[in-house]
Length: 157
Image 1 (cartoon, rainbow, N blue to C red):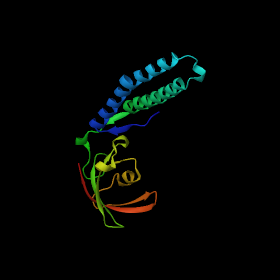
Image 2 (tube, helix red, strand yellow):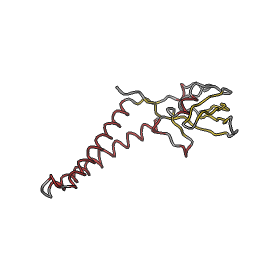
Image 3 (cartoon, helix red, strand yellow):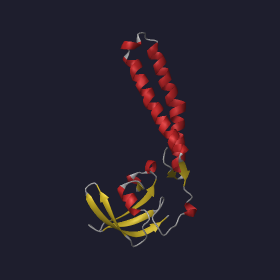
Image 4 (tube, one colour):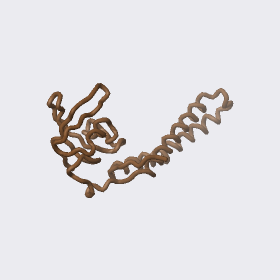
């Protein structure tokens, strides 16, 4: 059984578009490659055929995972979120208590995370550590190279 994941409408649409691309473009391309390789004769020594079959297996696995993700996706209704706590889709400004640096992140679903855009996953160590906190709270977060303490400076949508 798969776990429910929460997405923005835009994030879920991105998943659906990727699935459509895989099914309508990439799947027929691989089928064509397999047919062309099969026409070349002896399949036991046909590297092109075996490579195309391997690519097909990987593609079908990716399609299956996307199907599963979409089936278990829920769209977050931003109007129902508590603005006093850090939740998914919260824009949170945090201050690193060790070095005084202030950064701002938006917490999003795993597949929407993009550090360059300031979006971190709610499943990341920092995301998990911030969830449920309120303005002024301190969060002690275990990261790969030790422990960090952050203060919640501001929360917005």
